[in-house]
Image 1 (cartoon, rainbow, N blue to C red):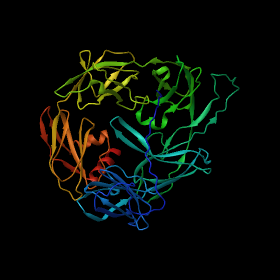
Image 2: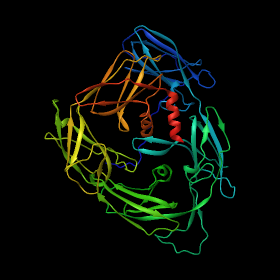
Image 3: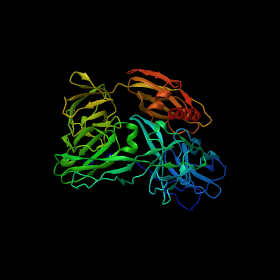
Image 4: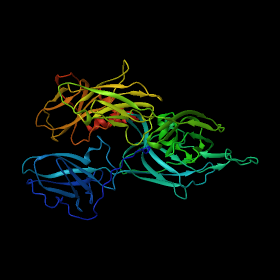
Amino acid sequence: MRSAWLLIAIMSLSLTAQGPIYSQRPRGEPQTGKAFIEGTVIDASTREPIKKASVMLMGSFGLNAVTDASGHFAFRQLPPGQYTIRAQSDKYPPATPGVDDGSLVPVPLAVDEQKLDVRLTLTPGASIRGRIVDDEGNPMPRCSVAAMQFRYTDAGRTLDNVGFAQSDDIGEYRMLRVRPGKYYIMARCFQTLQIPHPFIRRSATVDVPMLTYAPQFYPGVPDPAGATKVEAPASANIAGIDFRMSPATGVTVRGHAGPLPADRFLQIVLQPKDAVRRTWQSQNARINGSSGEFRFQNVTPGSYELIAMDSGDGHVYFARVPIEIGVTPLDPIEIALAPAPSISGTISIEGDGKVAMNNLQVRMEPVDYTQPATGDAPQAEVQNDGTFTIKSVVPGHWRLLVSGGTGYVKSVVRGDQDVGPEDIEIGPAAAGPLKILVSMKFGELSFPAQSSESGQYSAIVWRGHSYRDIRRIGPQGPTKVSLPPGKYHVCATGNGQALIPMNRALLEALESVCEGVEVSEGGSASVQMRVVTAQELKRMMEKLEE
């Protein structure tokens, strides 16, 4: 199993440079209807048509089209149904989920219906430019500049990059296609300077004293707490976001990790204890693969953790070491790797449903960002007698899931203590077995019929501060869903909005305006959904940024 510290999923779409505006069905597919949709993609600021925009039809099947010089597109030979159309272009930034809704439009289509004037809008991005110099005013090339915003997810709060640029030979940079919004702008330069020093006899454990450049937030502060946000309206050309970088003392952190298994894949990360700083201050070590010696160069003072992980010989070996870094180098650090413990247990089924145990799978997912990833989620197949063993679960906090059946995890007991399933703490040593109870006794929640100009809603149902169920409903009538018992909140978005983003802080804010409902085991409940507009969502998200 290969370890991975960061997994970034990137979805891309290739656009055809030239082609008809009409969508094409796969060869040999029979005509399934006579309805059609035609429309236009326009610039939200200039109201001018956008050519060569990609338009995607989503529903019971998917089709793609490309707009012509007049911004027109068409989808023909469609059966009736509920569709969603999305537009995008490589000249425009991607829309903000739940806020920039003009690029995503729901289209209900009756038998033989003709929708001739569907309009989608793309919002142009802004550009941000400036210059980076050192403390003497000399230009600093090859520095990275990032536009950053806070993101709140089920795992916590982080400061994420949403735009990037690099300074050129005269220290100038320009960041293009920045989505409209407010941003922290951070510059980071990786150049180093030698400090004047007397003669030093070099050895494997001695480094020449160096100065480095600590990351800097506009207008020249070390962290976002004192930074000034830069507002980037659509189509704006923002200039003068300049940086004067100051050298700071950087120290070397070195040491040794072991023992190493024969088939090793050792990784060591130095990450700040402050979760917000991890985005820009985490570092990967330089490692001697044969000896386990490691080194981090030019580390600025602060509170950190060393996290080491090795996935050799079919097992995961792990260690976590807290360290405090000042202005003077530390003594070499010894990291003792230990095998990550295995988690075993049994599953029992409550209810009348017949479940084949060997169809079930137990999976662990990390709860927060302090938990390093280990490639694929730790998981195990369940045996016919209901037993399972998950090998090599890294110490930390985990969420337990059981898939492959139609039930839900009702309880997880370790010893005589109920421990889950939402937050199970795994220590460095193997603990007692888990007793997992999977129940088939759901409750039922009904959504009354709604009416809307758009003809479509997205219903968001959750308990706690993470998604539990999501259903997209229309005005045709009530929709019923089966849910595990518990207290839920329910909201709806309409008018072509995207689904509300998975965002812990936003869900907490929505609890004050969305309907709450209790779903009992084997019972039924109904709820009158509160529709949250794109403007309300935007205000809530902006408030979270304050």
